[in-house]
Amino acid sequence: MKHTTTLAALFMLATTGAAEAGGQEGSIGVGAEFGLSSILDPVSVGGASLNYDAGMFHVGGFIGFSDPEGADNTAYALGGRFYYHVHSMASSDFGIGGTIGLLSVPTGAPEPADDRATLMYIEPGIQIRAFVATNVALSFNAGLVIGAIDTSGLAVGGVPSGSAGIHYYFF
Image (tube, rainbow, N blue to C red; front, side, top):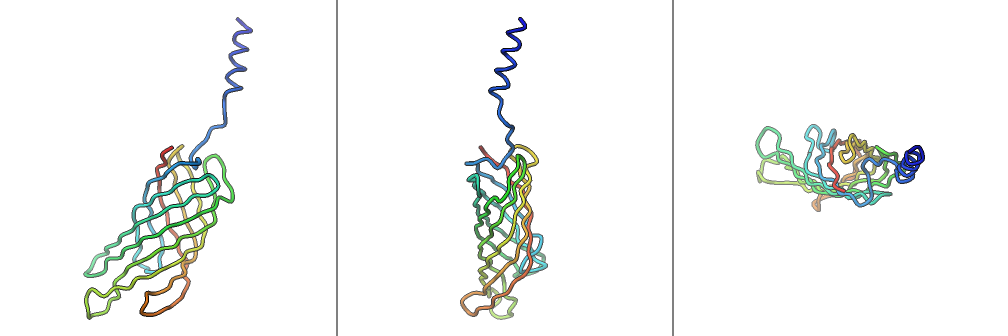
């Protein structure tokens, strides 16, 4: 009996792998993000987000919407991101990369009332993802928004930015 128990214990140890917590290669994360600061302060755009984790990096896209109190002030955002995982642990990773996006905002001009500006921006930065469960991640981004105004003119500027999100990953 003693040999059987020892053999069973050795078999269990040999077949046991390291516990993995999120950030697994080939997983897809669905969630939401909200801007903590933006190029439109005090208006922050938040919305739905989708990520694909490829192991050493992850890519994603987002679509956002903001309609603060008041007339004709709705903002829309659409974009994509890439983060290379510089360091990864079982339940977190640290990435360097950035976002590229489009932002449609009202200009505030009195005539015409529906006059809008389309802003294109690039946001180099960092991202920390913390997996609070095996497939649920909280993310925090920090970077610098570099924006260009639509075809009627060009104005390049930089503003610190940040966002937070939550994603559920399907394996």
